[in-house]
Length: 324
Image (cartoon, rainbow, N blue to C red; front, side, top):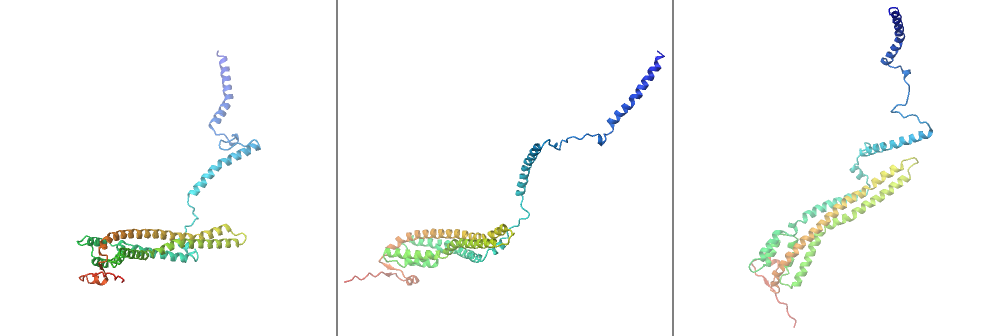
């Protein structure tokens, strides 16, 4: 056992010395980073592998294009949603000045609409046409004992000058005449006062009718100028941009004409309706007074002199002479 021990130890030492370099190389390979030349190149996960043939390359290109189209559409939609930084706001005053010579008559019509619209707003008040005090005063006179006194009613109409007072005074001056003659006089007075009230409303109707035609005429003339200038541009000029600028300037007159005509038409319609409503109320008042005046037919006459002298007795109606 003792003779073989040293030999075994020597063999073990030689085997350990032979395996030590291999162990050191393994430890170094595990602990130390590998050099760049030791890394084997291969397809990366983020980069596509090179195509094996021409058909595969075409298929991959089409797939890439189809993938980029939705992204491009989203980007274009986002750009459309945002306001363009290069676009300028429209200067309305400058655009109206560039509208052409026909803007002057349109501006005159707008001044006319404002003037007569304000005048009719004040002139068509109920107090100017059918004062409530006049209606209530005539009602009180009709309810007195003995009925309506035409002289007091005439004097009451003088206290409240209006369209209704003018019509009623015409009716009172015909007291004592036949009923048909009184109705005819009332109808004429009614038409006369209505025509006076309608006189300024007709200007609004005129503005509502001709102002859009002025705007259309200006637009047609502007379009003719725009196309003429575009046709005579030099070669290479941007004709589309020049034509678009001429067209939007030409449309200014139509816009201005409609802006004036629409309010004018609305005001004319409202004023006509108000006149008709007030005159219907006046007709109801006259119908209530007619029975009070029928009893004076052939008996008395009312004149301005008798109204100025209320204490004087009413002049009797003289019977007409019968021919022999």
